[in-house]
Structure formats: structure tokens, C-alpha cells
Length: 490
Ligand code: NAD
Image (cartoon, rainbow, N blue to C red; front, top):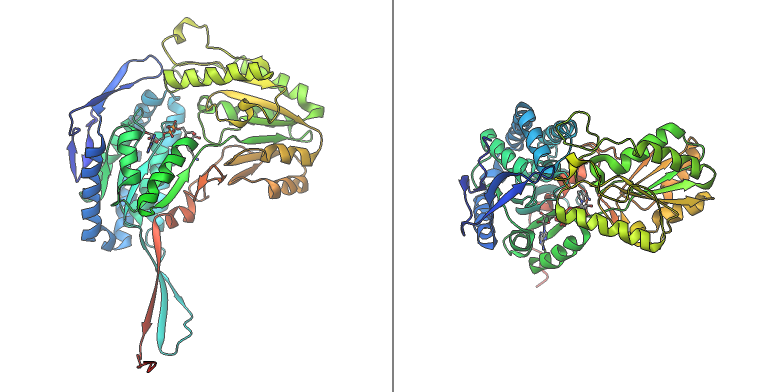
């Protein structure tokens, strides 16, 4: 592997100060695929100081926005040039299929292009002034030093949603990828260096959440913390960020409802319900894990799901027949198993799955069979908490209002969907659904132009779209008096 496998601080590739390292494990067979530095608070402090100095020097923020856009565009081109290597690294590191990783790389290049194009599109705004002979204008400026923390499920995709808008708007940053999936992020820092991002502007620190992550969240020299990950961690970060009242962007979990009305296109709804929950083995924040089906088609719908689930091909992400790879780690597999045990204890009916596969070829990997529970009710833990694995719960409804009530009965509000051929009914439901993204007759689609984020405990703020750029800017009102006069009050 040509990868540097190091941290990138102030324009230099470095090991960790303490000399510690961490092995990165392939979740398909538990082989060590890389050994990377394990940074801690001291590495984070050095990186923060570099980002602070680079921001305070002002070179990057005062670089014409079009030039910053050109560099961000160049990053997209380099990602496309190295797409195959990046996709292979992502699949090795996460277990996801190579086809999915290639798709991720296209999306990631698209995110860099989108923000490259937006970089010079906001020249500020003149507003009406109540004072004669004056000019009042509003400009947007970079927030400053940004701490960025990402999860393991979409390592580079989640990183791109943070890196591209932060760079385009003239911030400096320190990124901490998930300690178990840092490889594609390291590679993209190599590409950012090649594209011409100046030293100190973008820094990469590797290591654990409770060391590097908590330093980024609490350090007084960090102006903004952008975090994607679980609710529990998000709450800790929110507390730590109060140290200097950091700007906060939180993309947290979801327990996303997928409502199926009897008048929906049956085959398409079955197919997309499966995709909505079992794609990437259910390790997706917006996975449609809570299926809410109209009673009149419930049995037929569940039977169709179960029949197809039984035929899923589990395996290596590099085998083109594979439809579902392993879970990310032994720890995560144990967590999913525990949730399934809880579901059984709570009285839900196991319709399919509920164990590790018996296939001898899969024994070294962290595999879990796609699992469907029926007879679920909203008071169950498996309906309320994120298992973040291939586990679907099914609830029934009779009336439209009941479906929406069930859908909204969650502390989360990330995403949801409605399947029906009655567009008026769909609109009625969507208007009442308390989620940041709602799909009508679709599931899981996202693209760079559309904002992404959650209602309720799914987070604060939005990534992607124009709002994604606003996260990384402060608004300044500048009032200029062209004919100053004494006031003569005192
Ligand atoms: P996690 O919260 O365990 O970890 C996420 C990141 O936070 C990692 O880099 C980790 O090292 C770091 N971290 C851990 N403790 C920390 C602390 N005390 N201070 C600072 N940083 C800390 O989440 P995960 O298991 O990596 O990812 C899965 C979660 O991410 C799920 O809940 C999923 O829904 C969520 N997610 C949300 C979105 C979204 O767009 N809303 C996208 C992807 C994943």
C-alpha cells in the first residue's frame, strides 16, 4: 500500500508524539491491513495550534474565494483519478462491497465539486439602511478553526461533507476520523496536499474519541466542532463544546420509519424496504429500520420480505456476487446480537435471521444474518434504539393518523418515507412527519444540493446544500457612515 499511514500536521507527515500505534483490522477476515499512529491529546493540541496559527495569519481566508474553489475542485479531480485505490481502501477498511465504495467515491468527488462551485458565489448583500449617506452590508466570513469528527460507517463520505465546505469558505481545520476506519481519510489528506491546500490549513490527527476527540471538543482555540456519530457521544461533545461556546454541528443517529400503505406499488415497496434497511448491513444513520405497514397487506408484505432476505448473499466486499458484507467490528457485532436477544425477550416475533451465519467461509468475519422482527410495538427497545445493524422491526397500522403517530414516536427525527400512489395522502403524512428528510416513494436518496440533518435528537444544523456552507461561516453586518456628524447628546 502506498499510503503514508501517518498523521498530517502543519504540512508534515508525522507519527504520534507518544509513539503509539493502532492496527487497522479488515472486518471480513480480521487481518491487519495497516498500522497507523495513535495520537492523543498532545497530538491534538499541536494540530490545533497549527490550525489556529494558520487561521490567524489569514492567508487562506484572504485567498480569493475563486482560488480556494479551484483547489477544492482539484481535490475532486484527484479523487476521481485515484478512485479505484480509494474504493479498495474503503472496502478493506469497512467490509462494504467494492461496488458501493466506488459509488461513494463518485458521490464524494461530487461533494467537493459542489462546494468548489459555491466558493465564490456569495459576495455578501447590501441591505437598506435607515440612515442617510450610509452603506449597510452583510458579509459571511469563515468561522475560524474547525474540529471535525467522523464515524466509521461512511468514513470518507462523512469526511467530505465537512472538509469541502470548510475549505471552500476559508476555515482551517483538524479532522479526526473514526479510529477504526482512518485509511481513506489519510489518503484524501495526501490528495489535499497535492491539490495545494497550504500547510496548517487542514490537519489530520488519528486516535480515539476520548483523547483526540474530547480535546478537539473542549479546546479553547477551536471555534466550531462538527460531529457525525452516535447520540451518546454527541451529548458529551455538546457539553465539552460549552467551554468556549463553540459553534456546534451535530449529525447524530436515527431510527427511521418507512410507512407502507396498501395502495403502494407492492413490488417496488418490498424491494426498496429491503434496500432501505439492509444496504451496508444496516449501518446507515438513515436506514429504514422501522417498517410501518398497513394491516390489510401486512402478512403478504412480510412474507415477500422474508422470502427475499433468505436469498441474500453475504460475503467479501470484493466478491461481485456479495450483496451484504460484515459488520464493522467484534464489539459492534456483539451489540447487534444483544439487541436481537432483547427483541426476543420483549416478545417480538423473529420472522427471519436472528443469528450469525453458519457458512464456514464467513466465520472469521463479523457477519450477522439479516433479521426481521414482526409483532413489534413502539414501547420496545428494538423499535426505539439504534441497533445500527441488519435488523428490521415491523409494526402494523389501520388508519393514516396512526401510521404518522407511530412514525413520530421516537426521540430521533433524521429521515423517513411514505409509500403510496395517493399523492394527496402522501403530502398529508409528510406535512406531519418530524424528520429532516422525508422521501415519497423512495428511500435513502441524498445528493450534494439537498440539506441533510435531523429534527429532535438526531442533531443540530445541516450538512450539504447551501446550508452546509452556512455552518462554516459567521455573518457580519458592516455599517459605514459616509457623512459622520457629531451627535451632541453629551
Ligand atoms: P460514535 O459516536 O461512537 O463515534 C463517532 C466518532 O466520535 C468517532 O470518531 C469517535 O472516535 C468519536 N468519539 C467517541 N467518543 C468521543 C468523545 N467523548 N469526544 C469526541 N469524540 C468522540 O459513532 P460511530 O459508532 O462511529 O458511528 C455510528 C453512529 O453515527 C450511529 O449512531 C449513526 O446513526 C451515526 N451517524 C449519523 C449520521 C448522520 O448523518 N446523522 C451519519 C453517519 C453516522
